[in-house]
Amino acid sequence: MNNFLFDTTDPSVIVVSKSGNDDAGKGSFTSPVKTLTHALSLATAARPTIFMLPGVYAEAAMITWPNISGLKVIGMGGVTISNGNAAVA
Image 1: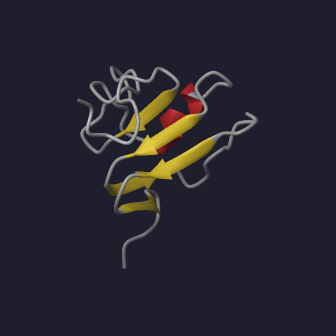
Image 2: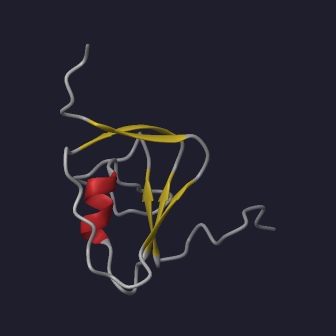
Image 3: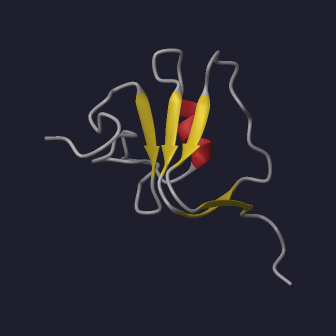
Protein backbone atom coordinates (compact mmCIF):
# COMPACT_ATOMS: atom_id res chain seq x y z
CA MET A 1 0.00 0.00 0.00
CA ASN A 2 1.27 3.47 -0.91
CA ASN A 3 1.41 5.62 2.24
CA PHE A 4 1.91 8.83 0.26
CA LEU A 5 -0.85 11.31 -0.53
CA PHE A 6 0.30 11.30 -4.15
CA ASP A 7 1.80 8.87 -6.61
CA THR A 8 5.61 8.94 -6.23
CA THR A 9 5.99 7.54 -9.75
CA ASP A 10 3.77 10.19 -11.38
CA PRO A 11 5.57 11.31 -14.58
CA SER A 12 3.77 14.67 -14.55
CA VAL A 13 5.77 15.97 -11.57
CA ILE A 14 9.29 17.29 -11.20
CA VAL A 15 11.10 16.72 -7.90
CA VAL A 16 13.77 19.03 -6.46
CA SER A 17 16.03 17.80 -3.65
CA LYS A 18 19.18 19.08 -1.96
CA SER A 19 20.71 15.70 -2.84
CA GLY A 20 19.57 15.98 -6.46
CA ASN A 21 21.70 16.52 -9.55
CA ASP A 22 20.96 19.10 -12.25
CA ASP A 23 23.18 17.31 -14.78
CA ALA A 24 22.03 13.72 -14.30
CA GLY A 25 18.72 14.06 -12.44
CA LYS A 26 15.50 13.31 -14.30
CA GLY A 27 13.27 15.18 -11.85
CA SER A 28 11.69 12.07 -10.35
CA PHE A 29 11.60 11.03 -6.69
CA THR A 30 14.34 8.47 -7.39
CA SER A 31 16.38 10.86 -9.57
CA PRO A 32 15.62 14.45 -8.48
CA VAL A 33 17.14 17.67 -9.76
CA LYS A 34 19.01 20.00 -7.37
CA THR A 35 17.59 23.46 -8.13
CA LEU A 36 14.26 25.14 -8.76
CA THR A 37 15.90 26.97 -11.66
CA HIS A 38 16.59 23.65 -13.42
CA ALA A 39 13.17 22.25 -12.51
CA LEU A 40 11.50 25.25 -14.14
CA SER A 41 13.47 24.57 -17.33
CA LEU A 42 12.03 21.02 -17.37
CA ALA A 43 8.43 22.13 -16.80
CA THR A 44 5.92 21.61 -19.62
CA ALA A 45 2.14 21.56 -19.96
CA ALA A 46 2.34 17.78 -19.44
CA ARG A 47 4.66 18.20 -16.44
CA PRO A 48 3.31 21.26 -14.58
CA THR A 49 3.93 20.40 -10.91
CA ILE A 50 7.22 20.87 -9.06
CA PHE A 51 7.69 19.33 -5.61
CA MET A 52 10.51 20.81 -3.54
CA LEU A 53 11.70 18.53 -0.74
CA PRO A 54 12.79 20.15 2.55
CA GLY A 55 15.99 22.20 2.49
CA VAL A 56 17.60 25.55 1.84
CA TYR A 57 18.06 26.21 -1.87
CA ALA A 58 20.47 28.86 -3.16
CA GLU A 59 19.02 29.91 -6.50
CA ALA A 60 19.99 32.36 -9.24
CA ALA A 61 19.42 36.06 -8.59
CA MET A 62 16.57 35.98 -11.11
CA ILE A 63 14.28 33.03 -11.68
CA THR A 64 12.32 33.01 -14.93
CA TRP A 65 8.81 31.61 -14.55
CA PRO A 66 7.88 29.79 -17.78
CA ASN A 67 4.62 30.61 -19.52
CA ILE A 68 2.91 27.31 -18.68
CA SER A 69 -0.73 27.33 -17.66
CA GLY A 70 -1.31 25.80 -14.23
CA LEU A 71 2.38 25.58 -13.30
CA LYS A 72 2.83 25.25 -9.55
CA VAL A 73 5.65 24.78 -7.05
CA ILE A 74 4.78 22.88 -3.87
CA GLY A 75 7.07 22.90 -0.84
CA MET A 76 7.09 19.53 0.89
CA GLY A 77 7.96 20.68 4.40
CA GLY A 78 10.50 23.33 5.36
CA VAL A 79 11.68 24.90 2.11
CA THR A 80 13.72 28.11 1.96
CA ILE A 81 14.76 29.72 -1.30
CA SER A 82 17.57 32.25 -1.16
CA ASN A 83 19.62 34.22 -3.66
CA GLY A 84 22.80 32.22 -4.16
CA ASN A 85 24.59 35.34 -5.39
CA ALA A 86 23.71 37.49 -2.36
CA ALA A 87 26.59 38.87 -0.35
CA VAL A 88 26.96 37.33 3.09
CA ALA A 89 27.30 39.89 5.88
